[in-house]
Amino acid sequence: MAQGEYRNRFQFQISAYFIGLTILIVNLMSWVLYFQVQSYFDQDLGKTLIGIAQSSADLMEADLLDFLEPGSEDGGLYVSMSENLQLLEKDFDASRVYVVDKSLKLLVDSHAGPAVGNSVPHLQSNVLEINKALDGQAIYSTLYRGSDGDLYKSAFAPVRDVDGLIRGIACVDASPAFLQVMDNIRNTILFISAISLIIALVLSVLLSKSIVNPLKRLVTAAQRIGSGDFSKPVQLEARNELGFLGSIFNTMQDNIQDQQHRLKQLKQLAEARADKLESYNNYILQSIDNGVLTISPEGNITVFNAKAGKLLKVDPDDAIDADFRAIFNEQHPFLEQIERDRENPANSDLVELSVTHEGKESVLAVQSSPLRDTDNALIGMNWVLTDVTELRQLQIDIEEKERMAYLGMLSAAVAHEIRNPLNSIELFIGLLKRQLGDDADSLHSIEKIREEIKALNSIVTNILIFAKPSVLQKDSFPVDQLLRESLFLAENALTQKNIDAELNLPDDPLMMTGDIHQLKQAVLNILLNSVAAMEDGGQLRLSAQEAALNGAAPRLEIRIHDDGGGIPEADFERVFDPFYSTRSQGTGLGLSIVRNIIQAHRGKVAVESSGEDGTVFILELPKGAH
Image (cartoon, rainbow, N blue to C red; front, top):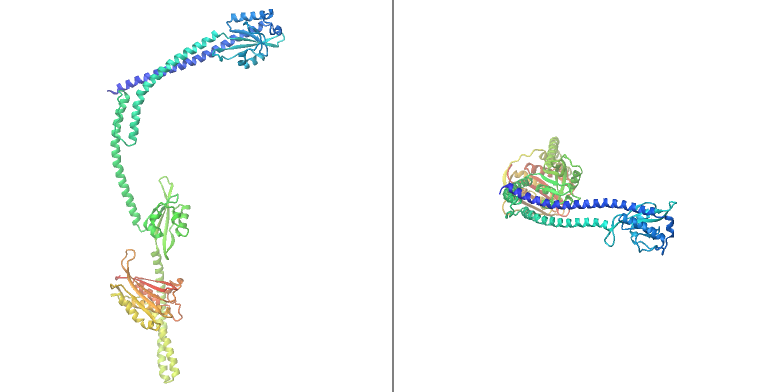
């Protein structure tokens, strides 16, 4: 069927529908016309009734009305006045003409029967008009329907005496026959309206069904498609525009289904690419050697990579989506930095932050920057954290080496200047000893001088060892050889103080590369330092093990643990400084030489101490040669 045929059929249905609407409109217009006619009729009839009322008032001799009283209905005066009113009633086809006094009691009536002094009941419905008539105004009442169902309309005019005083009211009621015309017109319009309404309703129901039912099917199909169900086509039997619309709808449904299938494929592809990109970005975040932390404007942590967790000592799984105040307590040093940057969201310079965890201090370089969207609206703050602990330690080591190099040069110069006079003194002491012969007291004094010269010479030798750059003669050797030979060299000192030495080594031999002679000097210096700290004897424990740190090459860790009184924590760093000693007889160079030797091997030396557990010196050395 062609599209034009659909349009014509549907057009017929629409035309029929508008015919029904036209009937309704005609009826509405009829009622409007009816009410306009009623209004005009009401005004015209009112004016006519006012004329009759005024004529009645003019015919009445107001002075004679005072003579009318109950029982005077048969008197000549009453009969004369009543006949005049009857003539007016007949000439103007009025329903009734009568006169009442100011208290609304009947005085004269065109109808026989009502007695003088009786009340006129329907005047109570026209109180407003009566009051205006008493004020001297001729007026008519509105058209109204009484309790008996009939229409009523009256007019009132004041009756004046020769002095102009109002002595009564002339009243005129309209003819029922005349008023019945309006009822007939109204009833005819009501009948036509009812018939027209019925016809319009029937046509509307029939036509609306022919339109609404197919539309309901289309709406149901649209809802079904909206929920994602494309399995059923729309079934429309109408051979009009709605039928053609159903056919177009089915075609559209098929197209939507094809488009949805393609969109689903594109969505899956986009999601796969997004997941891949997200994973790739996450791999980058988790792989970089910097901590990355992002906090939303609401205070929730949105990005927190593994490095940030390691640097800030926080579990990343606990941090993601959590409020930063719940993750960083008031004691955490990073909390103040976050709050300061959030208050002033701007690109900041590098700030160094110290974080201490389990007694280990780390130095972090922190830089913050605001995150903004394409509209420059703030969507969060970002922090990048870098561990600069080793860098700062390297700077300290460089400064320390520079200081030590200068101190070494100065110490070497002083040592040479001291050693030359010492040699001369020792030579002259030998000559003096031969000259004194067998004088026991003098020889004893000379021996004391020689011992002090040897002690002073030992100090000079240590200064030269400290000042002289270490030249390593590296070779591979077992660690147990290093420790056993060092213990052998310290055996005399251990025996004198009744100190037991315990050596703990793994079953498999540990090998390392280094200068065994210098390393023995370092271990021996520590052993002698420990012996000096144990005044009442005790136990000295030596151990060695292999340790892999942070995925780096394996290293050796040698521990020397004594039972002495310990070292104050404030002196941990100073014990390795040159010329620092807590003993009156100490030179303060032993541990400085230890540090130089260990650093020459690219190792580290540290100390742990407490009053109860004594002191532990930890030597960390690479296994292989550098």
